[in-house]
Length: 294
Image (cartoon, rainbow, N blue to C red; front, side, top):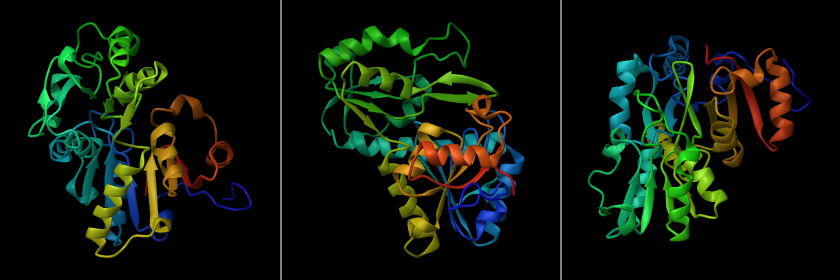
């Protein structure tokens, strides 16, 4: 169906498979909800690969991709649904390596310590640090106990800013949906730090480094150079997936049933596509759907 005079909008992923052989697909909110797989999405990704397409899962999870794969398997994501995984954690490790020999403070939960392993830096207390690596809030409420909010960290972030500590954000997402509930992420802390005048380095979507790595992986898999006109970004986050597509000259298939579900409830695909294209030029909206379906 026509959204305006310059492009049409698909709702079924099969309509986009031939035109976009390479899919860079978000994970949380599109492939699973943090607890279980979306079976229709897994089927769509598998069908695209069966047609000769390539799927690189591109996630803002602040952990190395080898750690993410077993987690996805526990949620029921089949290996047939993707060729490779590129994470914000992978890119973060490269940013940390640039500070070889430095003292860094880790702000985030213990579950993210796999990101720190084997890096050529010293992990220290905040008062000894020369930079900060943030993977999230220490307790966002997912594991019980008193949940913290990003504003609880303002005193600590202000202390960091006064010392002019660089702040490496391993996950630009502000929130993540788990089982239908939203929880704050590292991006929310980075946003406050930037408001305070701090220097923030972003690793994941919507910033270019993670897309460059993903496209290189796709090229290796397809055994040819991949032009950006052949690539479809799939995701549910406006400031990450959709803005990432716009900023990196990729077409987007926007999944409305994720973290922005309440904002688009009752709107049809054509209307949503028009609004996105008008609000975020020169965004190319190839598809809009409540979920990723074949």
